[in-house]
Structure formats: structure tokens, C-alpha cells
Image: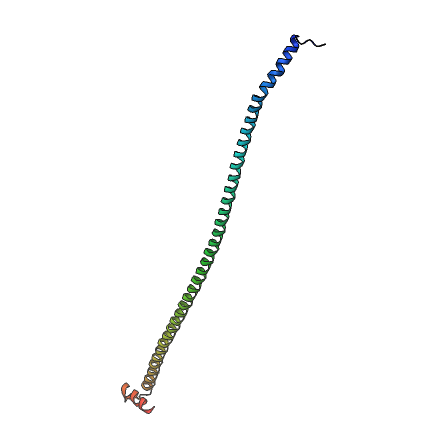
Length: 158
């Protein structure tokens, strides 16, 4: 039978009473600690959710800026291509005009040189004919007329 006054029994009862009275404060401390951890985790979760939303917003803004940049880049390239095409067309027209002017200038220069050469040949031919006629007249002893009379005589006959 159990002896209620036995010291092991009294220690066991005291231990059970100790556990019973210490259970409530320990339970409150454990629950408070767990509540603090839960609150801390909820706070961190809320912060991470806020960071996630901020990151989404930043990503959206960056994508909009990238899209805007790409559009600006396309417009810039189109304008540059258009300007280049216009410049090429303008320079081509200028080159065509320059070539046409050079061609006209060369044609006029050739015509002038041709006219000069023709005049020189006519003068040389005239001088040669005159010298031949003089020589003929000298050889035939027909020197009764002067050069001017002779020329006037031939000119009026024509």
C-alpha cells in the first residue's frame, strides 16, 4: 500500500503541484514567444510582399521605359535613314548638275578649240595658196600686179 507520508510520495506530489503552477506562466511565456515569432514572420511576410509589389512596379516601369526607348530608337533610325536618303538624293543631283556643267564646259572648250584650229588652218591654207600663187607668178614672170590688186581681182571675180 502506498504510504502518503513517504518522502518520495511527497516529492512527487510537490513536483506535480510545481508543474501545475509553473505550467500557466510557462504556457503564457511560450505562447507569447510563439505569438511574437508569428508577428515577426507576418511582418517579414508583409515586407516581402511589399517588396515583391515594388519589384513588380519597377519591372513594369522598366519595361515601359524599354518599350519607349525602343520606339524612340526606331523613330531615330527612321529619321536618320530618311535624312541619309535625302542627303544622298541631294548630293546625287548636285553631282549630276556638276557633271552636266563640266560636260557643257568641255563641249564649249572643244568647239572653241575646233574653231581656233579651223581658223588657223584657213589662215595657213590662205598663206600657202598665196605663197604658191606668188611663186607661180614669179616663175612665170607675171609680176605686173601687186598683191593687193591681185587679191582684189580674184575677190571681185567670185
